[in-house]
Amino acid sequence: MKITNEHQLPDAFLNFARDDKYSKGKSDISVTTLIDAPRIRLLKERHKDQMSKDVVDMIWPLFGTAVHHILESADDPVNVQIEERLYADVLNWTMSGALDHQEVLPDGTVQITDYKVTSAWSVLLGKKEWENQQNCYAWLVENSLNGSNRHTEVSGIRICAILRDWQRRKAQFDKDYPQAPVVIVDLPLWSKAEREEYILERVHTHQEAQAELDLYDNLQLCTNESQWAKPDTWAVKKKGVKRAIKVHSSEEEAVAHAEYSNEHYKNSNTEVEHRKGELTRCDGDYCGVSEFCEQYTEWRNQ
Image (cartoon, rainbow, N blue to C red; front, top):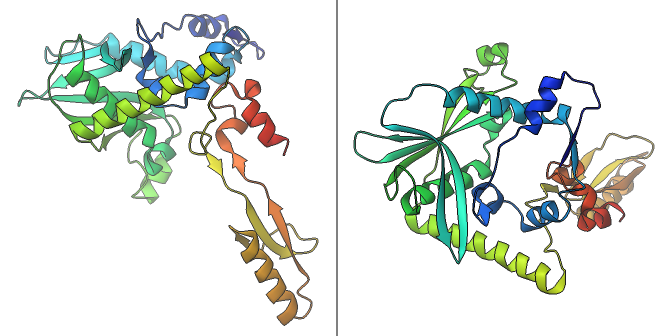
């Protein structure tokens, strides 16, 4: 991928971005890719030489990398393992995952902590991808081919969230708002069977998508969930006014509402406006490949 510097940031930013050492290692798929849509993985592989990103759009990921470098350099107790990539065989594929922090607890079990530079809203609302990712890491620890804690039972998974937009004043007046700029978020640890089932299903899905591409040159479509899709809505509003009286999830309900208003209320003059849904991830290019995606182009041209 080509990295540009359209805003003329100091060379240090550009050099740091180009020095990204992230790698899935000698594996077919990483956990981060496994939990995402196959179409995104395949589009990235197909267009890797055409992809570009400006360094200004990489500031927060770069900040996250810097945080990892700092924490890596710290002296840790003997019961703590940092920055270790684990490997395991799944359905004839090798899966890997890089774990930030593994701590062996007094009872001999392992607690996994992952560092995330993120927003306060991510902590307030929660992110399902965190739960999926960390449960995959737990499975890796217990089933890996390598690693300092190989085949050791995992008893806890959590996120150490570093909040880039934390505001002290909000914390003072809202007890539900994170009370510090760095917080620990404990995540649900699935059963061993649930972890196994999830990983097998995800690997199988990616393998099917790969075969479909190899045999028929066909890219599996992204789901609404992976596109962060917001559905179409129908707004009942007065003619010439932008603000809606009420927004309905179905056209039938909206039409009935407008007809009732026009029939029973003098000078109601209401109408129904169709508001097209959004593909939030695609619109913001959070996947990194929306410009190459025919599925997104077709939706946008509807």
